Length: 483
Image 1 (cartoon, rainbow, N blue to C red):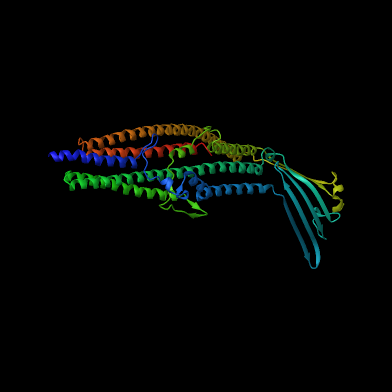
Image 2 (cartoon, rainbow, N blue to C red; image 1 turned 135 degrees about the vertical axis):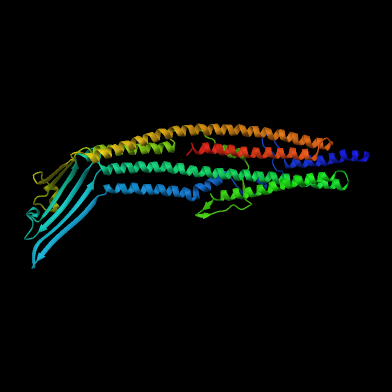
């Protein structure tokens, strides 16, 4: 008994000195960070074995199919805008007719027209006609067989107030701008989801490293306890206690290894290069500079007046106003005036001097539905759509303002949680080391040491999780304000 009491303190002083020394190396802690592994992988790995967050987001912007798909959707809208411009393309048409019966030429008619549509409901028209034959319709008869004309068709009613082709072009421009804003929203949504996956990968990797170090600690402790048991210094139950701790740490380590692989595969979902999907190899690691990642998402300007969501809603309101203006013009009568100056008996070379106001044709057309039920119904629908667009703009503004406030509050709350988690790590480390000292002096048990160690590990993992959550909260605010 005397010899046992003498050996126990000496043995445990040596044992716990080694354990504390190893834990200090493995779980060394500076003033601002959680304990880091002794092996600095960020320094040991070459540059291309660490995928930084900035590089990760850069690859997504350049190669991810969803980003390209968003740009394709924008190209589709731009193609529609190009098609709407087509109504203002100059048009040329040629028509001809002839009739021969029993070898006799009844008539030959040839006409060519060049038409230039304009934005203001005016069509500039130039034409050439050549008609010959024994049996021409009197209205087609030309004294010299040929006739040149120049004039215009003018819409003095509905088209003068708001013509449909100009309205279609203006709306297409607004829809293009709206699509551009929606693309910005979609790209930022993809980048935020990718950032979440990257931070989950970071969290899993850090947990994997922590569990690996504590497995090494448990193995060291079990070997020491076994040696002490073989010398008769400790009871057999202590080896069981040490083995339980090792198996528990090993089980958690395997789970961390599984979660690391799963999170790496989710990160791989965002990695593409020239339409070829990439997969992260086990050698690739996330960056561990959590403060650098936090600095990446600092928001300097929190003004939401130019937010793409509100801009898109504003463009929708503007398009609704154009449609309402067009439908209001539909209540006016259709009034079209056509006027042509004729070339008289001069030939083509003298057309510039032959235009004479005394030689002309005039056409005038007026039409108006008596009850205007179709037009009044269309105007009512347009007014309702505009009202809906305005309500959508007001609601979007309110929701976005509240969302930004909520994100700011969440970022501040998680930051405070991270600071509290750091204090917990420091306090649990003090308790853990104190329990080791008490155990070395024979005043504690291996069970209590393992219990303190478990709480210490739990606090470290909590710190890692809150750090990652802080970056995610900042990224959420960033991608909702910076475009």
